[in-house]
Image (cartoon, rainbow, N blue to C red):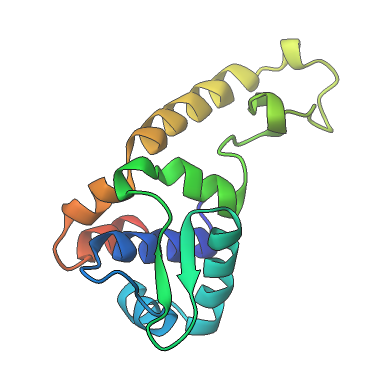
Length: 149
């Protein structure tokens, strides 16, 4: 399940993709993304550490996307905030793979095939859907908010 933190991150990034100005303050982003300001500021710091946004301090400071919106997929943002897309660690790709604690033999697991298909289908959709796609989907952001709620 998508965490509230990931929802706020995606909403804020979509608003940055829509922004007509080079920089958007955290306060303005919080209003546009309908997110608590302090919580969003912590999220933005995490996004900056992972090179999804760039922050600038000062009177004309704020946040901007680190790359064009068409190059930032929803999957990347979700992985930064929530971790792997897989529903179980045994179906994660190499970097996040680990054996499930309660499964003695992953090859005999009756759940693994379905979980692998779910992971693949989810990744296919989220890797293909970018911030630019979401920014175009609704002029007022209501379409994105309804999807992310």
